Structure formats: structure tokens, C-alpha cells
Image 1 (cartoon, rainbow, N blue to C red):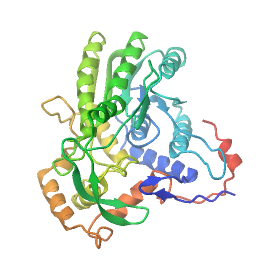
Image 2 (cartoon, rainbow, N blue to C red):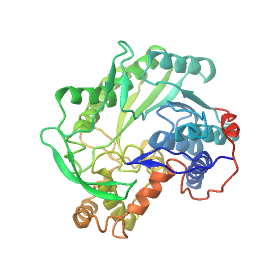
Image 3 (cartoon, rainbow, N blue to C red):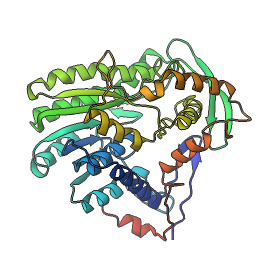
Image 4 (cartoon, rainbow, N blue to C red):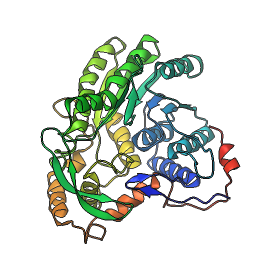
Length: 398
């Protein structure tokens, strides 16, 4: 029988609990169901669907609006007792099983979303087995590396400052170490490579391919989840290489809007709030911001996990009547995070955090760690241990 152990190296999770991943997916399904149904899309393509915002979007729309979904993600399945695969592999399977029990279509493509071949495979499936058209395309892909689909050249992103180095506190969860980190400045090449990987180019390529193939429904909506943050994290996020990539998504949204004009379509950048993801744990300084912010927002009753945040976005804003926009036309559900009182209290709390108290009740460190653990199927509410063999996992139908 397999024994599932959480393994963290620095702030990167290496272990996985497949049974816990399934329970976490079911917990999210039950959360959406508890909120009732709402009117929304029925045929949805989600690029980057196996975790965090992409998975939450898929769950919210399937169990909130009864949508059939296609999910594209690059994940790894089980090979041995020491190599059980990635959480997203099991998330995809758990979602498909839950959706099919409701009579919904839940197609998983495990492939390189950046490639022309994957785009064509998805298009062929839409034409031949998915009704021919999609009415929502969600781009929620997170990757640190991308191969150009035309040249094959590999690009790697960098999380760095621009202009001047940034010095500040960070946390290593593996050792529970609070330390001072210096974030070096990026070169022009590193900035360009980060935009190439994490900007809006692939989003635009997907929409061009889908449009050319005539698989977009009239009135189609395509969304891209972004993050801007506040003045508290601007030096290393909005003002750094990550911010340049996010700005490129704004530019590409305008291009995509022009592309979709003759099908009455729209491209919408959605600026989401700070949540616990695999990415947020490794962004320099960001964990300290989170444990301060979460504490304040938890006390205010405004803290959200990805499923809570995405379900509110879709239910109340995208397909509801409570949408908020900024001067650039971006949807702004991050207004709870950016509330002036919330930011002031977060700033004051962060200034009190040090090596002696960062993991005490002063902060939301325990909450951050729990949410981080949940991403890999550990410390999941409602989890019941099961005896599972490697053969059981390999036999799962993808």
C-alpha cells in the first residue's frame, strides 16, 4: 500500500496525495452547489484547467451553470511509488468523474498548450464531438517556460525587479525560516523572455486559431486572469518582470477584441485577488504579504480561496450584475484586497512581523500553509484515508 507524505523543498511542493486531491475537488464542487445555480455559458474551453483559478473556473461553471467543459493542461501521471505524478493529474480525473456523474461532458487534454498541434487537436474535438462551437474561452495558463511554436526556441521567465534591486523579508516553509532576501534587477532580455512566456501572445494565438477554425459562438467571451497587487507589493510584482507580462495581456486583449468584432465577441482581462497557489508561494516576498493580508481579510470576512473568489467573479460579475471595472476596462474583483482600510491594516501588520512571530497567531501563517498543503491533497477537510496501490492509481481513467 502507498503512503502519501507531504514533501516541501523550499516553498515548492513535491509530494502528492491523490485521495486528498479528489476530496479537495469534491469540496470545491460542494461549495459551488451550496451557492445554487446561475445563468452562464454551456460550452467552455479552459486553457490551464488543472489547478487554482483554471480548476476553480471549470468547477464553478460545470456545477453552477451546467456547462460542458474542455480542459487543457500539462500534467504527469503516476510512474512509481516515488514518482506518483502531479496534483493536477488527479484533479483532472476527479473533476471528470464528478462532472460525468451529473451528465456533463468533461474532456481532458494533457498536452503542451503552447503548441500548434494541441490547438488543432482541441479544434478537431470541438468540431467533431463538442457541438461545433464554444461560448467561453478562459486562458489561465501558468508556466515558467515556453517553446515558440514556430521556431521551437525555448524561453524561460524570470521573477526579478526592474530598475533597482528589492530587499525585503521572505519565508521558507520547509524550514519555517524568516529571512531577508534581495531580488536582483532583470536584464532587457530577461524582461522580454518573461513577457514571451507569461504575457498574452499565446492567448492571442489560441483565439486566432479558434476564430480561423470557426468554432467560436456568436457573442463569445474570452477571459484572462491577471493580478496587479497594491503599493505594498508593487516593487517586486507590478513594477517587476511579472508586471510587464501582465501589461502585455492588456495589449493583447485589445487585439483580440478587434479579432472578435465580427462575431460580437469580447476579450476581458480580470484582475483577481491574492490567493494561495503554487506560484504565489515562490514569488519573492509574496508569502509575507499573504500572511499579513489574509489575517486582515479573514477578520473582515473577505478572505477567499480560489474557488470562493472565482465563483464570486463568475456568478456575481461576469454573468451577474455586480461587475466593477477600471479606466482600462479591466474587471476588478480585487477591490476587496485593495480596500484602503484593508491595505492600511495589512501594511501595519507586516511592519510588526519578524522572525519570532511570523508563524504565530499574529499572522495567517497557518492558514497560508494549510491552503498551500491543500493544493497537493494534504490537510484537506473531510479527508478519509484509503488503502491505495500504485496499480490502483495507474488504472484511473483520464
